Length: 136
Ligand SMILES: [Zn+2]
Image: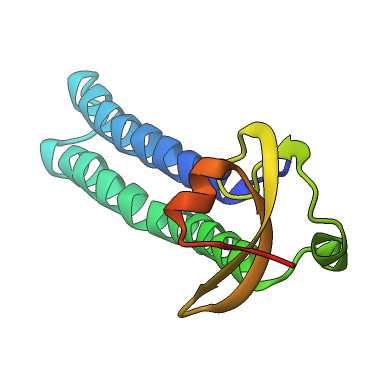
């Protein structure tokens, strides 16, 4: 329900922005056509409301986008709790690849790059694609 909440917050920001823009324009047009207000206040409601909705959605979108990026960094930088097990038993294990998520036979892999050394259980395709070596 709350997993990967950043993507949902970003989607909510887009939804609120769209509803706000359409609602402001609709309210401006409706108020003008029903002759409740003059043209200038109706234009201010329609255009101003749309711009304010757009600006306000930036804040919500920024929160969601920040969460997505932090989650991505967390996955790369923080070793998993079962880290020690990766080194002890290097027999093929069946499960979800920690890079692509596909369920298959896994390899205990050591990934060395500019971020440092990490240990992950990965599928054969991710093993080959990420320049891994077998952890021992
Ligand atoms: Zn994979």
